[in-house]
Image (tube, rainbow, N blue to C red; front, side, top):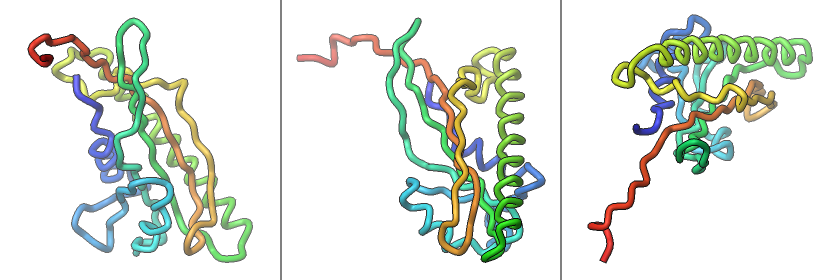
Length: 173
C-alpha cells in the first residue's frame, strides 16, 4: 500500500468545506496553500490575498517514522494549519479568530472520522487511505500573531501505512 495522499485530501477539503471554499486557479478565491515547514509559514502568509475567509495550509513534506506492531508501518505525519487574519490590537477579535479556526479544525476532524469509517467498511481497492488513521495521535495548538496579524490552529495526526520489507536476494551482490 502506498502512502496516503494527504495533500490532495486536504485540497479536496478546502474546496468542499463551506468555511473555506477554495477555488483552484482563481487568485481571489485561493485558500489552499502548500508550505514546506513551519519555518516557511511566514513566507506563504505574505502571499495570501483573501483575508476574510479561512485558509488552509498543508505541510507538504514526507515525514514519518517506521513503527513495528503486528506489521511494519510507515507512520505518516499529516499536518495542516487553519489561519485567518484578526484585527490589529483587538483581543476580542483575536480570540474570535482562534475559536473559529478551532471550529473549522473540528469540522475537518469530523470529515476525517467519517472517511475513516467509510474506508474501514470498503475493500482495499475502494479506500482513500484513512482506514489506519490514528485518532489518538490528533494534536493541535493555537498560534499567532504571525506576519500581518494572522492567528490560527496547527493540527497534526498520524496515518499508519503498511509497508512491505520482504528481502529480495536479487537486490544484493
